[in-house]
Each structure stands twice: as structure tokens, then as C-alpha cells.
Image (cartoon, rainbow, N blue to C red; front, side):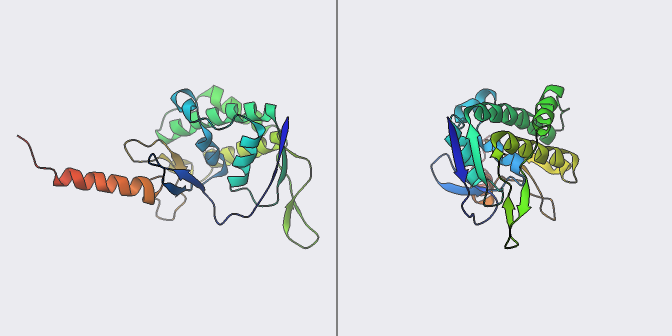
Length: 207
């Protein structure tokens, strides 16, 4: 079984997520590899798993920040490989955000995926950017893994963070000029935490 994904235009980088009460909000994790972390995760995060079939991985590709025009064939084996890579990336990113040592088994999983050939771009006859034929799930995962390597070894490696809200574990990289991003999204956790702090200040003191 396989699934073919054909890209459609997107307005801007980032993903539309749903809050606990069902309200949509825009979350930009700042990197392709971190967008994959919104599909589920290891341990307790497995309850949020959305990658079950090739169509699920193809749907994530369509929402991702990859440039338009990618005609991708995804096999069932690619879904399992995507989950393995994602779980390793999830734990690596959380460790980096909290200043913990990066574990060798997680690094090995990323490096193994990156060893495969990545997706290949090309210039079309009209001068626009396109994708070379033969785009597979393996090439997709190599591209994601290589993006993670660039992130973890690049200038923004020390800006990998976890959302500052007390009940949110979304991970992102702060690529803003001032470097003071605290929340997954101001319209979501930023506003919630500000309201929470305001209520705490207004609450009567007890003795």
C-alpha cells in the first residue's frame, strides 16, 4: 500500500493546531524537523499519534514547510521509519532544550536516516524551482534528518526551546532577531499564561 502526495500552496511556514478546547491556532516550530514532532511522540505522547497509514504521512508532508510541487510516493514501511525518526528527534530536541546530554542511540537514529539520499530540487524550464522525480519516503526522511543535523549543529542550536507554559510541551527553535520567544504561539499559550498570571495577582491573599 502506498500514498501519493501532491503539494498545494500554503500561506506561510507553520502548522495549524487545535487547542484543548478545539480552537485552531498557528504554530511555527521554526524548522522542518521540528514540524514532524507535532505528529505524536514516544511514551506518554503516543496517545497523540497520527501517523498510522501512508496517507497520514502524506498529509503531514502537505502541511509542512517543504516547497510546493513535491510529488511523493509513501509506503507503509516509511510510516514506521518516520515514527522511529520522530521519536528519536523528539527526545533529542527535549534534551537539547533542557541542556541535557544528547543520547547516542537517538543520534544514531538521526544519522542513519540522513545516510540515505535526500529529496532533490531542480530548475524547471520556466525558471521556477521544482523537484526531481523519484521522491520517496526514504528521501523525505533523509531530508528531515539532515535538517535536524543542520539545526543541532548550526547557529540556532542554543535557541531550541520548550514552550514556557506550565502545561505545554511543544518544542521550537527561536529564529527571531531578539531571541526572546517563550511560547509555542502568543495567541495560544502566551495569552493563556498572561491570563493565568493576571488571575494569580488578583486573587486575595490568604493567611
